[in-house]
Image (cartoon, rainbow, N blue to C red; front, side):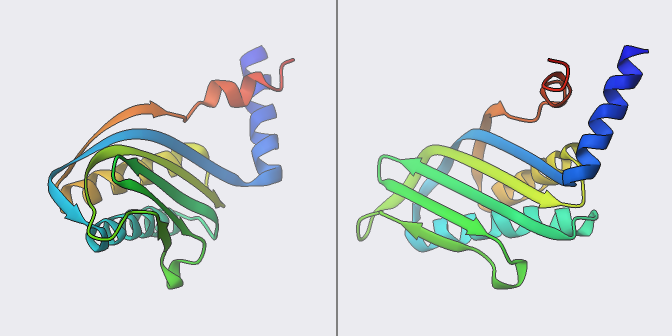
Amino acid sequence: MEDEHDEVHLAMHREADELGKFAAHLEVRSHRPMPQDEVVRFLDELLYRITKECMDRGADMVGHVKAFLRSEEGAMSASLIDIKKRSNVTHDFSHGATFEEGDLTLHVIVHGIWDDVVRECSVASMSRVFEQFNIEHEVLKDHYDTERGISHHLK
């Protein structure tokens, strides 16, 4: 009976905010040095594909889709709020610097679909874009956690 109550409580909570969320921390590695403009295209494509997949699966509004890429060469930050305008990318890479490896943090918040769907969309899009740009990746932490969503209501 308690499990059923927990599920109903979580469903009511999600109906109130209608936000789906997903975050991940990854290690990424290119097979060759990537110039800045290609890294910008990679981040833009990653955020665009995740957002488009979420919209195709029922999201009706973007909260934010963000990526933070850190490496020895510098850092890049990308944010997508309006799918029609694509991503805004900023960086502190020095002139002529290239990217080979680093870590990537991804945050996705959309309205209208739940966490599990946002996660499915994000993971599928990540795989396609990493393959497209020939980038290896390892998920260090996947912040999708339905248990935490339920447990904070039980205290």
